[in-house]
Length: 325
Image (cartoon, rainbow, N blue to C red; front, side):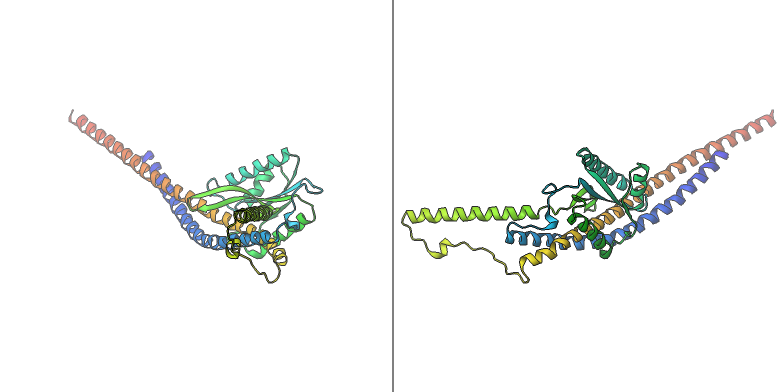
């Protein structure tokens, strides 16, 4: 009887745990739906701002801006800022572990090249990890919870832009979980500063324009040499020209910091969405495992009960036979 009672107590405990994991799964699902709307809603704006900046850079051609400074152009500080975005709570599967492994690999790579890492950590899990690793944390952010706010992110981005333009640091990177889809999230280390792609886009557009002009001039000369009539409409190619008000450079001075701020905000939104997905999947897996354990314990209880009944019947039959004798 003692074995059957122990199984009943354990089954009851598993059922109670299942109620908890099921509730946590439902809460994570609700938070995920809310975070998904923010992350998906802000991503087109973030991409469009960067696209507009690249078009402006192509219009201006070779541009110079403090936020586009490449490390090594002048004096280097050999310091790199790394923002690690983790969660405040656990029970999210391998979410925090994957981010911290990606951050650790980046830190080892930078230190191997002789650079010093300034750590900025968001989330209790990341702070606990680096404290255990005896690695100093420059600053810890506790204001970013389930709903990152733009004013908080803007303040952090302004701090990094000030340090970058004053040449205190050479670059700024963000280690976070990139939300690709509901079924796919990948740890990523994004370079926030200097802005990647803008200078390259301007150079690429300028090179294409030079090649286009050269091809056009060669074609006109060839047709003239053959004595063909070249009309003005055929000699000119349609090009899209933009008129900017205010000017393109003034717009670029405004949009480059905005690009940094929106990119950092998108990192926090993607991280929050990925965290809720990971917790939702982890709690669903825990609930399914609890169901399996309940079924297994029920089968064990039935077998134990059957064995107990069989033993009791055998003892009764033995007593009856003894009385007959």
